[in-house]
Amino acid sequence: MVRRDPAFVAENAVLLQKRIDQLAHMATPSPLLFGDQLSIADCGFVASFALISIFREILGINVVLPPTLIKYEATLTAHESVTKQNTAYYKALNNWAKDKLKG
Image (cartoon, rainbow, N blue to C red; front, side, top):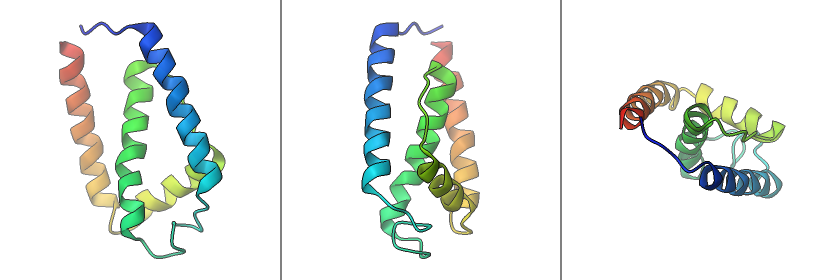
């Protein structure tokens, strides 16, 4: 089992929450960053939301997406161009996490 420094994890969880909150103030998805059209600006957030989700699970951090970003994530992952790849990405992340936790 891999051991993590709880203070390091907690400190970086606070920083991650700060960045998420800043994003929520800066971005106004309606429903995506450029209206209803999926754009290259949206693509990085698909992976970011997936990573945040897996880190919450494996590290037990309390990082919360504000309502606007919850809605944005749902819109992104429901988009026909994203759904299949996002599902595959979550599977790959879960496998990666299991391997990392084995040490």
